[in-house]
Length: 254
Image (tube, rainbow, N blue to C red):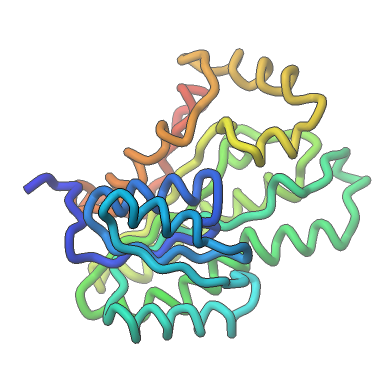
């Protein structure tokens, strides 16, 4: 049996309606996990794709910034499936954020970013981690190159993703005695609709600047991230916790 085999396990993925979240959900399902796909948007396309390929999944709406919504989703998952083994905290504000100098960021935009990108991770951990204490599990938090290298003109996003790394390290210390591992992944810019929406007409210049700092000089695709997610979700990383893995083509060394 492959170490990344997740047969019999239940994996929760937030922000799973499109982009990276959908790719993570599909990858976990292919590895054998039953996937709980959560998003503010409808996840039916993600679920349909998984089921068409022989996997198991169900989707529901969830606002990660609202604790009641997260607890309702956790209760639903436990009622349906009886367990939670993996939590991938992927949901985040990025594409809809307005870029600009730090002193021009609107207070409301800052607060919205922190609500989803930081409090959302905390809320999902509070809702889904307690059921893991019986048998152990894995939490994978999605950070960003924005935190490890620094993304100018997006201080709200950069700060939120740096907070995710701190949350990851502290939570790993707390949960190790329950055999629950907590790690983060820090990707460079990934070719998704969200990336195009964020950079807009500046996309070409932004991509050139980012890729020029990489050792492997091409834009990441969703497939470049899935293997790292499976590694951290599975027994292949049974003694890895509190770490931030940079999947950025060699831009930074952590």
